[in-house]
Length: 343
Image (spheres, rainbow, N blue to C red):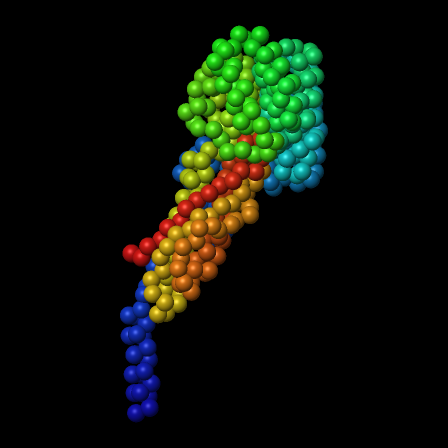
């Protein structure tokens, strides 16, 4: 009789558990600590570059630095060394190396853009001004005058900035209306810190006005507008770059895992009702594409007791993402919106 009651009780437990909510098996990527593939080979190649550079040893980095200092160092080696140097906190060495390379080739605007762009990308306005000044002592080019004007504006030396824009205009005969618009934008965007990008439409319009000029003219427009189109040639080495579209593509590579996080949290607390709501996540893309400093904002999960579990699960998945290197190895803010509903 006792055995019969035990069997009956076990049957009842199994019956009740069968009636509860089911969570399907997790997708393969859920437990995988590595990044998920994006489906774009070009994007994958750029992501892999940052992973490779993060893993180099101190000895490999020292050898890379020695090779990059040689006069005939190839452009891919230079690009890799600059990216690795930024990641290791040696930005000053990278700027100096690129400047020496540019100073030795005064007619090469691409090399000038490499040095000036790196300094501006990291808000080193004094270094930008000094390098541009020495470059202009060897060769007058409109783009370097414009870049120096922008750096002077960011240093709150507006009168000198105006003089440099005028000097650039004398070399390429800028349209007066365009000249006025550039000065207004420089005044508007005179903060020495990071500023939000101007509209894509305005950027494309101004870029089209100088796209056939030299590399440094194009560099000026990109930094003035805060938009860095990787498809437009500026320098001679790959300074990285990741668009908002590519950021979204990488984030969505783990979309199956995010949904599984929701399903786990939804059934984790019995009798709590269905979990639903939304939130924004902000994080920083590091110098080599790593995810850093994850923060949540605008959370609207109500009082559901599993909201913390959902947040933690999503965050664990986000930290496994890997992006291409941001432009100039400068940390880039990324934002994504999550929204979950039952069903």
